[in-house]
Each structure stands twice: as C-alpha cells, then as structure tokens.
Image (cartoon, rainbow, N blue to C red; front, side, top):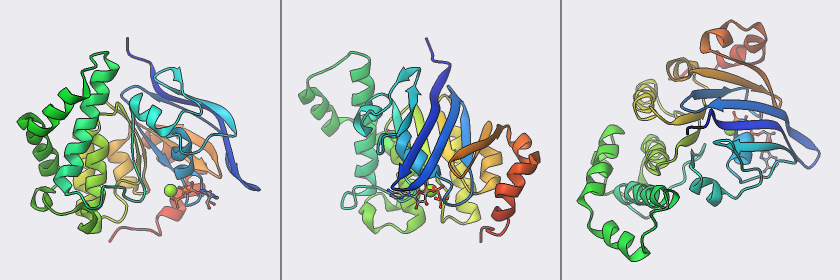
Length: 265
Ligand SMILES: Nc1ncnc2c1ncn2[C@@H]1O[C@H](COP(=O)(O)OP(=O)(O)OP(=O)(O)O)[C@@H](O)[C@H]1O
Ligand SMILES: [Mg+2]
C-alpha cells in the first residue's frame, strides 16, 4: 500500500539560543507530489530541511515519513527509510572522480532498496557486484549524460566548477534511490540555461518520487511544482497551486516583491 503522504510535519518549532527560527510549521506533502518551499532569505527554509533530515531535532513538533513517525531519527536512519537530500552547499567526495561519486550513490541506493525489501545478501556479494557490474556503470553514464557531466566524468569532484558541482550533488541525491527528495536551491548560482536544463531533468527523473524543493527562482517553481508553500519568519503563511500563490496578496508582499530584485544573469 502506498502512503497518502510521503512527508508530514506538525507544529515544528526550533530555536537557536534566543532566536526562534521555526515557529510551528505544519506541512503535508502527498506521495508523488512536487512541492516547492519558497520564502525570503533567513525565513528558516534550510533549517526546516535540517530538521526534516535529522541534522537538528525539533524542540517541539512531530514528523512522519510515509506515515511512520520519524521525529528525532538520525540522518542515517532517515536515509535508510527512503529520504534523500541535496544541500545548499555541495557535499561530494572531493577526491573521488565524478563517475565514482555517482557510482557510489547508485550502489548504496541499491543496497538500501534490497535491504528494505528483506532481500539481504552478504556484504561480500554486494562488493563483488560493486566491482564488476556493467549494469551499474551504464546507469552512471546515463546520469552523467542527463546532467551534462560526461566530459568531466574522470575529474575529481572537488575540482569541478560550481555549476557542475551542483549538478553532481543533484545526481548523487537522485542516484541514491530515495523515494522522497529534499532539494535545497538546486539551481542556485546557475545561469538561466543551466537552471532550465536542471529543472527539465528534475521534471523527468522525479516521476514517481516525492520532491520538496527550496527554490528562489519563480520560473523554476512554476515549471516544477504541483503545489507551493510559503515560509515567512518560521511559519507557513500560504500553501496552494503555483497560480494561487502567484495571486496571493500576502505572498506578493512578503516574498515576491523582494524576489523581483534578484533576477538571474
Ligand atoms: N546552526 C545555527 N545556529 C544558529 N542560528 C542558525 C543556525 N542555522 C540557522 N540559523 C539562523 O536561522 C535563521 C534561518 O536560517 P536558514 O538558513 O534556515 O534560512 P533560509 O530560509 O534557508 O535562508 P536562505 O534563503 O538565505 O537560504 C537565520 O537567521 C540563521 O542565522
Ligand atoms: Mg537556505
């Protein structure tokens, strides 16, 4: 049976010292939905991802993944339960090549999926498969080709230029096989063409997955999202379809007015 909600948050609050960053966030993301989280700088969007992803515990509130409560679970445990994420700043194995980074993510994803399905094989079997599988190499090349990373396949990930590093980060998040993906500003720092390419890729590969994406670029939000939630000062002030959000006066005042000053190059 598929869970109705891939992700559900209730009353999430978090403070740092005296600063309240999240003030009672309620959010429900349906299974298979692409949901964008927008809001001004400092609204608490990345902090919310850190809470969902288990980096920070919420002070108050509860979290469910696929209808199972996961409040306070570690990032590892959440990853095993099917949650994947990309970060606002890229995290890769810097000395490994681009190819090895994606291959590693695909392999870990396969192991996680089979372990969940109860088909646990001895680690030595997995290691043999890891070393020899041409099938996995083929899938790596597909990811690299989709994200325009083929030419830099043998480059150490740490030596990539910024846009390519961001694309690799996304490729890794996707390749890990997670059913629910948290993507923090996947197109940040990309020019218009690069961003459009990445959004088109996401539209294709996110079919059947649930995506919660933080995105400042409204073109990307409108292209990708089924629904949008607006976070302002640690609270969701509106949730709706992209058209409803575009028409919402409170949202325009709180957010879109600010955004117009930040056009892409
Ligand atoms: N670990 C931390 N310790 C203290 N304060 C923090 C910490 N993490 C975030 N904050 C504070 O929480 C507030 C919200 O930050 P957050 O990064 O979540 O905002 P954001 O909505 O992601 O902004 P942006 O759009 O600029 O990425 C900021 O004032 C930030 O300084
Ligand atoms: Mg952020």
